[in-house]
Image 1: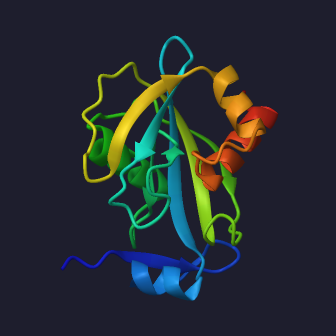
Image 2 (image 1 turned 60 degrees about the vertical axis):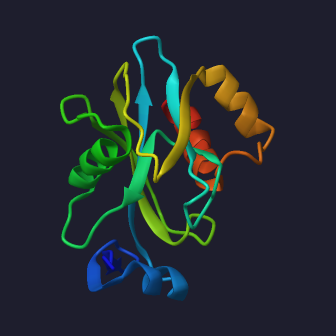
Length: 168
């Protein structure tokens, strides 16, 4: 079995340890993640519907791509890797940082660096991670988030609210 090693971080996002993912999650330790918002040239956002095989947020709509930052990995490198793994595309040239969220219980105790990128697809979805995906207008997403759509992850709703406050 392949054990996913992640960095445990302190309140200043400084690495203090390296432990397996399941121990970090089980103990509620602070760690790092990335979420990527991929817009097309028509300004629609690609959302993925998480696979029912996932251990968390099964079958819920989430950011275009997301994942943990591996131990020893930089946020940006993680965002590029996760997008390639989940959607089958390179976004290095169009990737730009937006903001970073601090860990809370609601965010799974993750420092989350949020990025945006531009890509029109097509995507090759990783079937182990993603059930399906689709493009949504920002108006539709805002309406669903405002109505607390239970088919969207809490993390995505928090990210979208922050994005809408200063980035939308």
